[in-house]
Length: 122
Image (cartoon, rainbow, N blue to C red; front, top):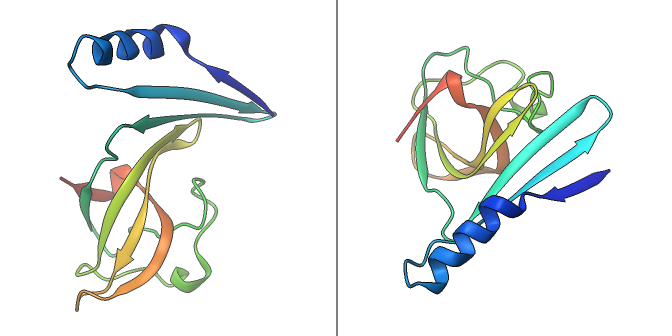
């Protein structure tokens, strides 16, 4: 597996921090056969509140549309929510990693993935 730091963006963000704007983003590109994945580590992670667009929205165990989480093979209702912590882009799509909460507000699954286009996030 090869990890490559995108120096241009990192140096630009580092410069902004040094002049007092306080923005720091480090991006990595991870490559392996058949998969290229880019992650952005923000100085303060995104806090995305997400709700399923339909009962066909999926909960995944990995950022891959074929990796349905074992607890969610039968789908999910519309009242569930995910608090997103990280956005992951790879050659299969854009995913959000976060914690899944029940309609009553209890934490059900930590560190699961959703497909961004299947959920409404704000």
